[in-house]
Amino acid sequence: MKTFITKRWQGRIGWRTLFWRDLLLVGTGLNLLMTGVALALLSQEVPLPWVLFAHLLPVPYNMLIVTAIWRARRRPTAVLGVSVFWLLLFMAV
Image (cartoon, rainbow, N blue to C red; front, side):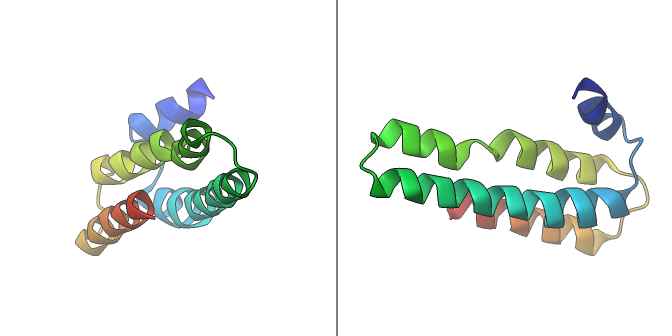
């Protein structure tokens, strides 16, 4: 796990991999999964702090990937805008 984070933080992963795989594929899947878990917990009348914890669990991953995209070399400007929009979208949901 340390290598995964370090490679992204130090810019050793290309922006295409960060954007298409890490952000759009894995990030979206993780967010949708945890939102589903949070809704399931809510339907079972689990205390709200646990529901919020489940729902917000992907936030550190989201922040890491968006920050890594911002730090990536030679990435298109549109990718920056889409990544921030994606982050705001999943923070609001």
